[in-house]
Structure formats: C-alpha cells, structure tokens
Length: 167
Image (cartoon, rainbow, N blue to C red; front, side):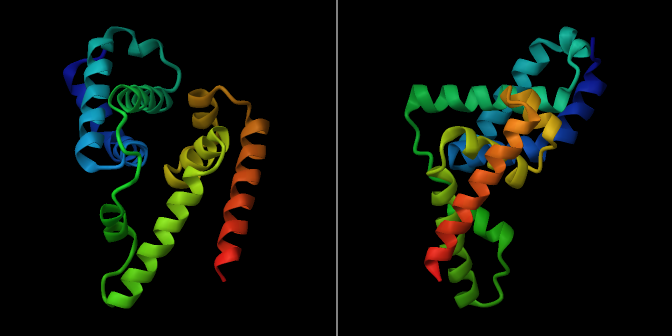
C-alpha cells in the first residue's frame, strides 16, 4: 500500500506527461486537468493494489486514456486541440510571421495525426508526442513491439507524405 507521501511523489513525477496526453486527447486545458485529476482519484482509490503493478507509469497513462475516451464518448467533446496552448509551448513568439507559420504547421500536423488510423495515431502520439518508451506503449496498447514499430513507420510515412504535399 502506498503512503500519502509515496502517492504524492507518484503524482508529481507523472503529472506533465499525463497532462500532455489528456490535452492531446480532449483538446483543451480545463477538460485535460479534470481528466488528470480523475485519474489521480482512481489511482488513490486503488493505492492498495498499486504495488502489484509492474509499470506504474504505463498504468497511469492507460488509466488516463480510458478516462479521456469515456469523457469523449459521454460528452461528445470536440477533439480539436487548443492550438494557442500548444503553439505557445513550441514556437518562439519573437516574430509574428514565424508564430503564424508555426501555428499553421502545428494545425496541419494535428489534423494529419488525427486522420491516421487509430492504431497508428496511438503509436505516433505515445512515442513522438508523449515520449513513451516502447515498453510503455506495449503495456498501454497491448500491441507487440514489432507491431508498434510497424505502426510508427506507417504513421510517420503518412505524416511525411502529407507535409511533402505542402511544399
């Protein structure tokens, strides 16, 4: 059984990754923060059995994903990511033209990822956006590492092809 101190350490160590995953899936910061908090509540309620979990980080991400998908199904939320939130994180705001171009590219990338088949989208999102290891993706998705590599290859190829059409 995790003590409250151990649980607090667990929460703080995975918060950023969980939040990034939730914002990608739900599309806005408020819903994402709520989903992360719901995940923490779920984990707190089952803290007695968390010692038995082999990969707690993958379990946390998997739990969060289930909560996000449940919210999307129940509320039929808009899955468009809040581009302003993401673009402020990834683009320098020194020049307005650069910021606009980066926002356009980010929007195109988001749409391209959203249009991938669900297994490819999951693999690309977890590996390239959330920076998950192959083992974490395997644990969260149920795919073998060979399948994950194949999904990543096909997903990345599709993204490259879509961006090549822009130039």
